[in-house]
Length: 420
Ligand code: EPU
Image 1 (cartoon, helix red, strand yellow):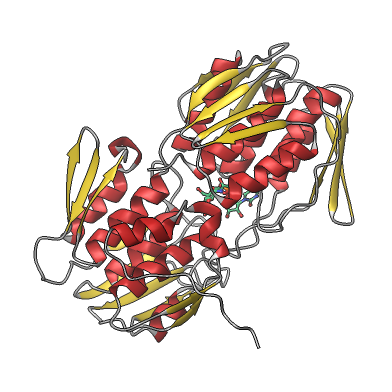
Image 2: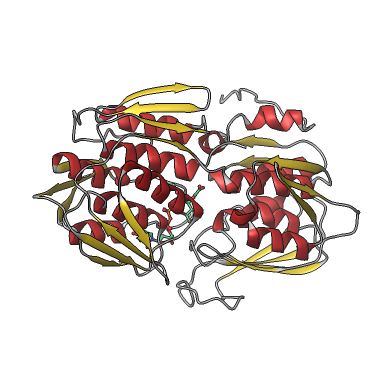
């Protein structure tokens, strides 16, 4: 299994904090790391990529303007901290990203401002400058992954101490903290989502092996269960997947933990058990898992529910599944027990899935990466052929998916579509 997209891209940006060489092993060769390499090059990094190893070094920041890259990537905002620390000014383009909700960056801006940055927005660019970042206390109203990372990258070289309350603690963030600690940062993990950072004067080069991609692990796990197959997901880490594995067991799927990975299989032809799934920040059931998991729930006998509490608009893909034969209804009413920021705000952030329903092949346009993998799994499960477009979203996060699926026995090929 490849290294995590959402850890690799952040570490590439974190490498801008030092003039020394950074080496990343288990480096995923995907669209998002290519875009991030381009970002780093645009501010002065020398980047060498061979197989699954990246060498990156930024002796000098040669440009404070981060290039306007693909609108689909949300990484540029994370460059603010490193650039402000190294040359006291930075300009980054307004973010792109998946179409899964508003995805504001107000927490990022508030944190950096509190750390001593002056940030304005002009046209499609954020302009930031500082006389020097200083440690402070930051309270995140929601444990945002990106805002926690942004604060970390700004605070590690700021003068004095920073406390982040309400921090995100996803495995990718812990891996970033390990990476920064190797670079010489002083970061302490407290109880109750607190992170303490003691600013240091400089950071050094480092070699780091990126954690395996838990979203990729889930994608292959669901594929095995949906297609009644058996897949050993090499490198899958049980500790990163505990709540997913519980859901698999309750559903009636099987898994076995081995030293080299986790094997997923389905032993019988009986429909799955219906479930209530509520997405949450770590250690909860991850929002990026609900789309593939939904395919399994279409094969469960009875009524299942998914309550999405992280993003307000992540059920667009269910309409495509309905066209394939699923019976999924979205609703604005919170159907679970978790506290939810979207309650009574009119967002379709819940769905009810009635099963089991056979799926049949269809024409599908992929709207974002995780919905995209769900569509591919649905197509592999369905009777007949499906034509899936928008696969650039998949290439952003899955390395050679087509090749690996073929090895697993899938009948899949890339075709050029005549647009006329
Ligand atoms: N939010 C705000 N204000 C902010 C920041 C976030 O209101 O300033 C809200 C968001 O709108 C969202 C929630 O907080 O409703 C969580 O957002 P978060 O900041 O945690 O997400 P992110 O950092 O933008 C990362 C991953 C996502 C993953 C989420 C949640 C990357 C590049 N992206 O996004 O991954 O779903 O954390 O775990 O790390 C993916 O890989 O396909 C993907 C979308």
